[in-house]
Image (cartoon, rainbow, N blue to C red; front, side):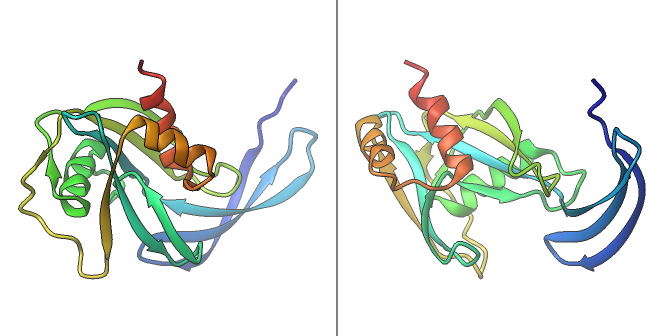
Length: 178
């Protein structure tokens, strides 16, 4: 069965600092035309960082679109479409937390919401992070570092206290490593 849609044309609706929005015309597998609202995003890197004491490093921050404070793994957008996600991950770990690491290992990549955006998140793992970051957060970022054990993470998950998708994916990876 053919499930592929064929791109026909694009109308750029909005061009911003983080996203662009277009309306694409596509041809469906049955030959009919349809439109797709499409959010273009450079992508992002996220980091599953753990201390030598086997605590995961999370950040608590207010997210305006969600309208609430969320608990998340450190993460940030790629500054440009050609930026190496590894470089982004190293920068974001140091900017959002007081921790750095010697080695980041690639875990996986995934789409954030493939129904309307091409944003891909690249997950890296940083083991045995150390507190010595010389970098500081961007002037428009206000974050609090939170350390949690596996037992605390499991309790937070059971209580539905973690609502961020990238964090759920990263923590699932961490919890399955035993």
